[in-house]
Amino acid sequence: MTPERLGLLWGITVFAGAGARLLAALTGLPGVVLLLLSGLLIGRSGLGLVEPLDLGQGLETVVGLLVSLVLFDGGLNLRLPGDTIKATVLRISLIRLVVSLSAILVVAHWLAGLDWSVAAVYSAIVLATGPTVVTPLVQQIRLAPPLGDVLEAEGLVLEPIGAVLALLLLQLLLGDLHGWREVAIGLLNRLGGGVAIGFVAGWVLSEGLRRVRPSPSSSVGLRLQLTLGVLFLLYGICEWLLPESGLPASVAAGFVVGRRPAAQADQLDPLIRELASLAITMLFPLLAADVSWAELSPLGWGGISCVIILMVVIRPIAVSLATIGLPLDFRQKLFLGWLAPRGIVTAAVASLFSIRLEQAGVLGAGRLQGLVFLTILMTVGLQGLTAKPLAKSFGLLAPEEPENQESLEASSEPVPVLSDPGQ
Image (tube, rainbow, N blue to C red; front, side, top):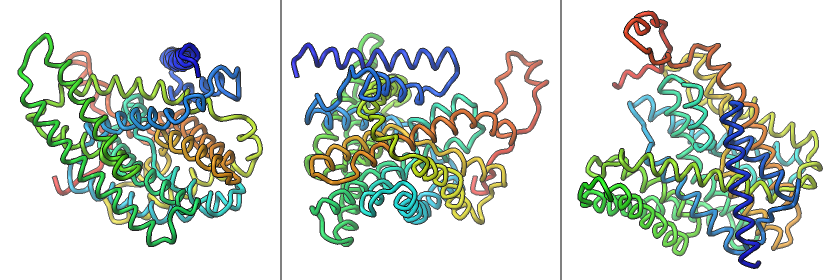
């Protein structure tokens, strides 16, 4: 690819993403849906202006670095206040690992027509909800705490696990691993190793940030540069030592920096959040450009039915089982069971794995990618549009901030919250 063509590819991609963001701001529609549609427009399914495969091996590197930035931002803002919140997130994560994985595997095979091995990869890819989608939705609809904390934390916990497990299942499919014992060992090694390296890197980064002398002119910029340097080096080392361990390492590093007061993460957070938003604006159109209607259309009603069952049957059952005995009322359980949009990591993993499967000559690679993007479109579209009306009807919205004391006294309607006896 010529430098001119490469520059045009990135220019079109970023312009399409920025245009989608503008349209979302003007219309109030979910931004991620418009970002995906913009990618379909400029890619294979539309005008054919962007071909991600032209980036060659650099595509995986670029996607990985940008995704690590998004997950670091999530770890930086991860909050688990109270024992009840921690128990809720842990139980939802563990039960969904068992219930959702097995149920989605069966549904993807029988309804979407994927082979068992490819269906297993799909079930791991779509295991996690997307914090990059959940966080903007929670903020946009003003969801009363702590439901937003539960939804964001669930995605951050499961997203690296799903990505690593999907990679190991892919290697099992391609013959690089032999048996489930090697898959289990590989999962523990990558998750444990990534988290351990991430904790060390987070501590080193927080110590470096602590030593940056406060200066109005340069301290914030230096903090940002130091953070990006450590983060990208962390990702590169992790991928060199243990492929796919860079994702859990990024979350762990962000979590450590966000918990150490000496790092003054509150100064860093707005800049990292803006960069993470830019990464999403670039990644969604780029990855969606790789999807063609030829991959979506053969799925037909079977693919649509697969995603619908995932949304309205599998997810609610898993959440109901996970929240037995916890102080959640029916409305809160129902809302947690409904809101589970898939995000950028899901799209990134699907695109990269589809390329690897195609290169290996495995049948069903295109259907896998098409079904994943159909899942993203349907979950983000339907749940994004219905989240606020549903939360409002359930009384789960936080009260609007009053403009003055009179409005404060006037707005006294109680809002149900998740009780926490441990606080």
